[in-house]
Structure formats: structure tokens, C-alpha cells
Image (cartoon, rainbow, N blue to C red; front, side):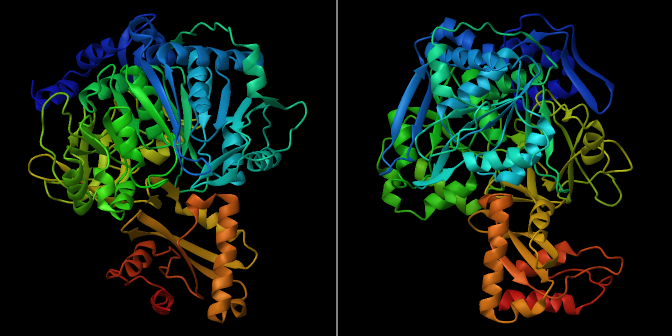
Length: 633
């Protein structure tokens, strides 16, 4: 079958198509209706069916290949960077998940309760996610680099009964204590968890809060023989919440279902990622991001593959570490980000030839636009197909790619590919809402219903779901990706950047509003504008322009440097280093229209050395001169 025929089936006959794809997973109770779209834009997939993510990822494979490797946990965050490695078979993984599930139940966690997971890339984090899925609890994983304020906002929204954390993470051999950040987040949050379950890695001493904090190792020892049956869930029950930055300062809780997500992952693992049982999959992402959920934890395991969970960076102990992993564990499919490849490109070229990479069949790259030089270089070095793919936290699996599991489609440099099954894509004119022709720039949108696996809604906020995603065009109700795109004459799409105020830093989505609010908390800040600026390594970086309350405090270069350091410290403390701007410039005016709207695109254009565009509505042209002068100083 050609991919075009496969895709057209999903569009013309979605109920028939997805009923067939749903046969890829185990159902405890068959579904009665493939999709209920009686209340647009809310879609319910596989209505009446009952299944479980943990069962499909672990239990069913214990029966088929229980002694084959399921999890490979590797850390190079050791004193000398030498890898610490441990593996679990599917049977051993099931045992650990059941022990963790028993601990959660003993701490009062049940079906529908939320467990917030704030952990580094260690095996216990995967046990926790799968244990939640097993007992019907809702997990909400928060990236371990997030600071107290960001963590507190997620605690307040998710209202977790239990928080599962660790004493510390580590990056480039430098310990990052988690517990003080967690304690502060709980202190300032309105909703307090009943318990905090702690994995003590002996990396950083921490304060034990009596009556609240409990030790994972101690409780695990009590539940070594635990047997916790799978809780069968309705297809449309909530599996997890994953927070993503929005254009406002408040993060959005992307809410995912159980059945639709399971089907989407099982389908994509074969059709897009060509995964086979018994092979090894290596995603270099983090469980704090959607790639970690879909293609470190659930997807590979559901395909019967061994999955690599890596704690570390691509250049420690040296830039051959990933290729060491590929060789030793016979990795067949690898998933990373363009930023990581650009980092590796700067390293000694012989490190790529140090290991036997003959097992590797393809490298998948996503998270940010893939540029031609990066793609061409890594393709030549590895000698395998480089497969771009484009998607979002909200969709849970690729919107655009090439499905080589269906047909050996050609890739096109600079393009993530063509629409994947179920995604009814089109490009709309930003102003008129009319459909764009081929080779005409427009906003990439998806017609409803969104295919299985996509977000159900924004957690506890249906109104925000509709307003944020489905109300951007007066002409029709469509889901906006908030990305510019172009489609060529052959149907390949090219992504050109964001239409909103979310920036993409090395694959991490950051809301400019969130960073602005953090900077505004500095006592000497009157006004601030943050924009995303193109960066050759990271894709984009945040740059801040700040009007100080007291201009005399930034009158000399030394003063400006000190002011910048203070702003960095504020952002680090409140949001974490991932959100820190690359530069902070002190100015006395910000470019605005006469109606008071900030001219972000003009600021961004100046930062990138481009023409700032139409400025007929600008209130004070001197404000742009100030931006130019600041950039040149």
C-alpha cells in the first residue's frame, strides 16, 4: 500500500481506519464507538472500551518475551563521567512497577488521584509513571530543572495527593539539589500534598519533613513481593497531565486520555518509527517533556522494544558516549534534537567513528526546525536516513513526518514531511482565514476531530482549551498550531516559526510572558519585553529588553553588567536556568504602537539583523534606535 492510500483511508474513513489500528493494543473491554464528536471541538476516542497503558507497555510483553531487556538505564553523571549502567527485563520491570504501585496505594493514592513526579532521568521515574498508569492514578511529570515558582504553579493546578522526587539531579557532573526547590514550592503553593516520596541518591543532604516525607528505599523493602493487578480504565479516562508554556504566564495542563493515546503510540511506533519487538530504541530526551512520555516510556515498550533512559549530556565523558550506547546495546532507532547534533558537530570528528554503528537504521530529529547543513552533516557521518518529524506537547505524537513503515518515502531536506494519519491539515491566511495555495505562507491548522492521542482538553479548563486552540479564526473552528508553514507542490510541509509569543530553546518551549513576569519581580524593573531570537546552536534564545525604574543604576557598562546578572539570578531562582535569557539590555523606551501594543516582531527583527518591517503605527521611533544602540554596545 502506498502511504497516500494509507493516509486517505484515515481521512475518508476514520472510523474504519482507527478501528483497525486499535487492534494493535489489548482491550479488556471492546469499544462500542470509534469516535464521538458530538460536542466539537471535544473528541472522545474508542468510547466504551477499557484498557491500560501499563498492561500494554509491560504485562503483555512479560507473557511474550519476559526475559528480554525492557529498560536500559545509563548515567554518565558520575564523578569521572564513566557510565553507570543497569538493565531490567520485562519481567523485572513489571516487578519494580508493582512494588512502586504498592507503595503508592499504601500512601493513599487511588484511581483518579494525581501524582506529581519531579525527578531526574533515573529508573525510579519510569517505575513511577508506569505505576500510576497501572493503578489508574494521573501522573504529572515536571522537568527536574524547573525552579520553585514554576513547580508551585503546577502543584496548585494539578493538586497532587503525592509528590515523588529525589534528593538531586546532576548535569555535567555538577549536583543540582531538588529537595530545597521542592520544599519551597510546597511552602508557597496553596495545595499541599499528603506525602512526598523521596529517592535518596546520596548526592545532596536534605531536610526530612516529619509526617510528610517518606523514604522510597525503605518502603520498597516492605513491598518486595507485592502483586498489584492492573486497574482497567475507560478509554477516555485521564492518563496524565503535562504542562506546557502558554502565551500567558499560567502554564497549560495538557490532558491526555488512555485508549486513544495507546492506539496512537502503537500505530506510530510501527508506521513512523519502524520499531520491532526485541530491538532497542534510544531517545535522548527527558521524561519532563512529551518526547520522554511518548518515546522513552510508553511507545517503545508498547512496541516490545528495549528503551534507553539516559541521564547525562552528549559530550561527557566525551562526544562518543551516545555511539558507545548504540554499539553496546545494538540500538536500531534513535531519537534526538537538532541542537544536540549541532553540539556534536563541534566535537572531534573521529569520535563518531570510534564505535560500530552498524545496528543503527535511522536517526529521528524533532523539537525544533532542522536546518539543511545539520541534516546533511549527520546523514553523511552516520550513513543512515535522517527523519525529521514535527509535533507538539498537545498532539502527543508526530503531525508531520515520513511513514517509512508504510512506504519508503523520500525525505526532503528542510521539511518534516507530510501529514500523518488522521491529521487533516491546511494552511490559512492569518488575516482573512482563507485557505492558502501551495507555496503560500500561512498558519498551520488542523480540522477537528483531532486524531487519537492528542490532548482531550486543558486540565480543569475546557474554556481555555477552546479559547487558546480553537478560536483563532472567525471563519471556522480549527485547531491552531501557532506555527507558520508552507506546503510545496508535492504536499511536503515546511515549518517557518511561531505566530505567538512562545519560543523554542533547544526544543524547550518557553512562554515569553512567563519570563517577563519573572523579570518584572526584580525591584528595579519598570517594564520588560522578551523576544525569541534565532540562534545557530539552540534554534532560538530568549533576549530581554528592560526599562529600569532608576535609570541611574545602569548608566555605566559595569552597572549594566551587574543589572544583567541580577536579572539572570531572578529568572534562575523562579523559573530555572532553562528560561534564563541569553542577554538582558537596559533601555529607557520599548517600541510600541500608538495603541500601546508592543512591537515584538520589530524587536526580534532588529536582534536578528533584519528589516523591522512596517512601522507606520509606532508611537516613538526613538525606541527602535535605543534597541539598535543597545545591541551594538
